Length: 280
Ligand SMILES: [Zn+2]
Image (cartoon, rainbow, N blue to C red; front, side, top):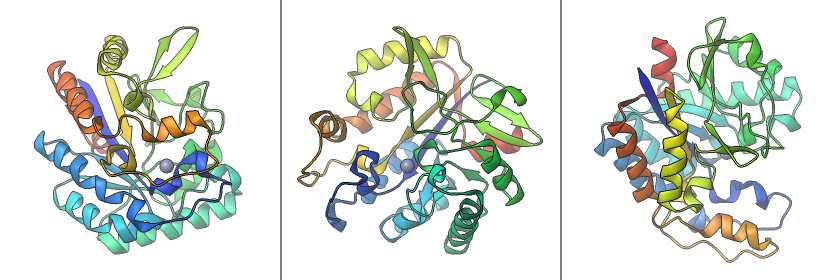
């Protein structure tokens, strides 16, 4: 069986990593959680159940869309209280953070939270133990990619490998994004801006290359990436950062639809991560 997972990290436009440490004025009209609607509609059109890793700090604007998503059978999971990387916390503050945030989501949406993705993929083995003892059954934060210099690391060698992306240890699952061999290293082909920035024929080439060797594909996206609305004027950004934020947003939903169609054609079955972890 070949599986595909569609995931969204529900956070504000202002949570973009390169904004950190820069003085950028927050304006609700640019926060962009409303862009979730088009993405949820797209998943519903293909009867795909997605996973929404949510920040508590985005609830004010994202809540109505998340209610709709849960009603339609999508899975709610945790991304954190706000977008602070767990790597800047100690174990005690990390545990307080996830317990508080999990409780908020469970009370607001009357659903059980089983999955976690760390902001900035900042995960460590010791944090996995904390997730386990607080009722989580899976994590999706391990980004094994050489350019991801600020992410954490999980010792996947000690896990049983279920397929290309999914690992299991003591009934806990680690589900990682894809990467594909290219040039002298690896390229991520799960999202993170790379898919948005690059033309479809290039993406198709790399996804084709990727799924030739894999029985599993994961996609991840953020609300601002699928927003057709303009972004605010931002000072103090490097040109490459400016490009990374602005390019490809208007056509991104169409590109995501092409990925869905392509994977369906290749026989991939779409599941939420929670659904997969429950059945594996
Ligand atoms: Zn994030």
